[in-house]
Image 1 (spheres, rainbow, N blue to C red):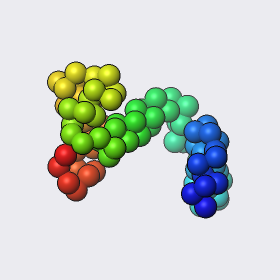
Image 2 (spheres, rainbow, N blue to C red):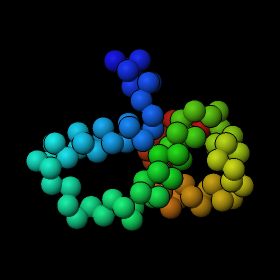
Image 3 (spheres, rainbow, N blue to C red):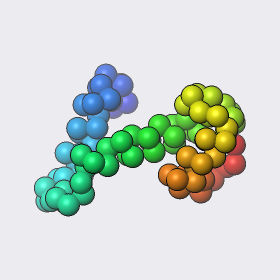
Image 4 (cartoon, rainbow, N blue to C red):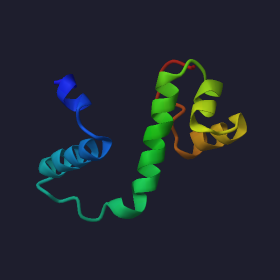
Amino acid sequence: MLTNINNLSLEDLIAVKLELSANNLNNRLYGFDLWRNTGYIIKEALLKFAISTTNSKKDAARFLGLTYTEFKKVQVKYKVEGYFSDDI
């Protein structure tokens, strides 16, 4: 299963996830304003990925091309501090 997911492009993976979400809601994704919120959604995903795959918050900031001060502000903006149980 993971091999199949690994072969999908990021765009295809997002499309599949949206389709599965729509199926669970009887194809009623109306009113979520996906188009305007896509940037927010992607940045939140990148932030979570950076935090989960690096050894420290400073490494995560460097990975994202942010200063540590910018990283701390972004972390508050996207409310991901409590998302991970272990403090990195």
